[in-house]
Image (tube, rainbow, N blue to C red):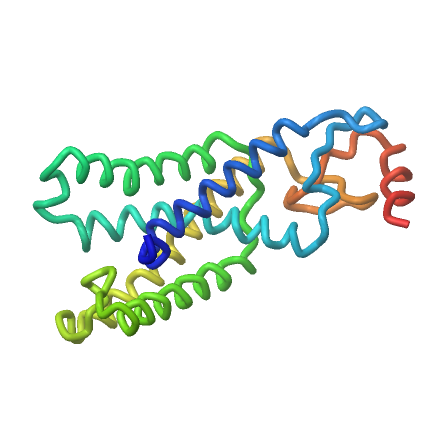
Length: 220
């Protein structure tokens, strides 16, 4: 268990589980405000929490796909389906994670991923790389063999660069999908805290003009 958090697969699953839990909470709390406009708690959360939520959305819609691609191209071996447990682990950790991420991308109305969150995702990947080598320094084991410089030599740089490039490509694809979906739904202008914004993040449609006054009063 002490090494559980050393695996990026587990970290991405934890992030996905956290996102789905928070989404479920907001789903249950989604209800009309006094002005008859539907609202949910995230709209009134502090800016830091909103920013964290947006960064998390970018992570949970891209990291699972990156994990799945990396696993089946670099890690999977003849032992992957050698036992019932290994088969279950491979499917639940490296297939179902992508299914959940794709369902979030294709069946919800998430606005386009902000470009500013791409560097955040890359920083997270870089931080994990450091964690992987800290694990080796403290426990004398590489959680992923493709990170072992004594085995991979010059290939290690290619793997690291390729994974970073893969994250960028996946991010762009998810951004394109969410942009198309948002455009098709006509979500061009959304209402937030008494003002209009584009993109739809943490906002509700400007249905009731009286809601603007209420929002400004609450801000004061």
